[in-house]
Image (spheres, rainbow, N blue to C red):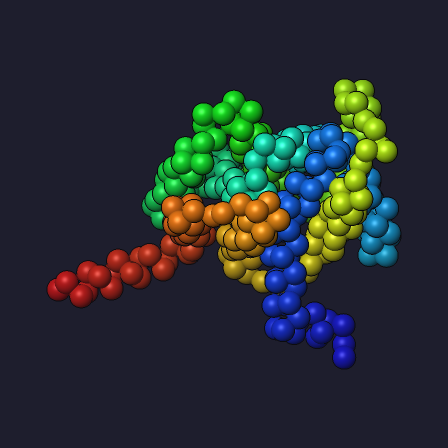
Length: 311
């Protein structure tokens, strides 16, 4: 079978979509296990150091440049700092205090931040369905945080803020990359920034954290290997193929699906009973965020249909 025909097969595309949803859904429990015996700076750094050689190999095989264009040096620095280095440290730090399921739910706000930044940077319009979805989603998220007690505990609240800041930075870079990263190969986009971020995070860890490699458990090492190879490499490759073969709207629903996977796995591993109110609010929150992704034409059609029915 021709390679292009193989990857355009609808069953292969569906399989890759499931792989990405599962990989991104299990990333959070992987981070949780890693930071059990590894400091957050080191955990984030080792993940990228493990991933970097594989990404370099893939970039070479794909015959893509590793270095950014000279005119895009500022974008490379922004991407390295505010997409990889700082956000992944914040997520590792936050997961010391927040369950992996709730972490995934918090990070699923990233597309919402991207809508807001698109308005600020690209002057995109914010439509009524997006406004409704954002409002409903964040109100449910606030209720979840209050009901779970994360507003009352300082350390837990600090963990929540750290993860939301990571989502905000990713939302900003997602939009800014459309403006500054146009024409940059997707392999180039990830490979060197991940390598530099990994080295910087490890160096910072050796400066500011007390590390004892003998105390790192086997589970944490396995989690780091999983995060480095499967989440950062295979998950990225699968997403790259889908990006070229699926509608961006449909693909963006990964952000609605992976929190469900993460919450389910989190409840099993962390022996955490999920309350009915948490489930209901999570469903409403994710539905609110889903509304922001649906084409405006659907809502216009529904309004028109409702007007016709009332006549």
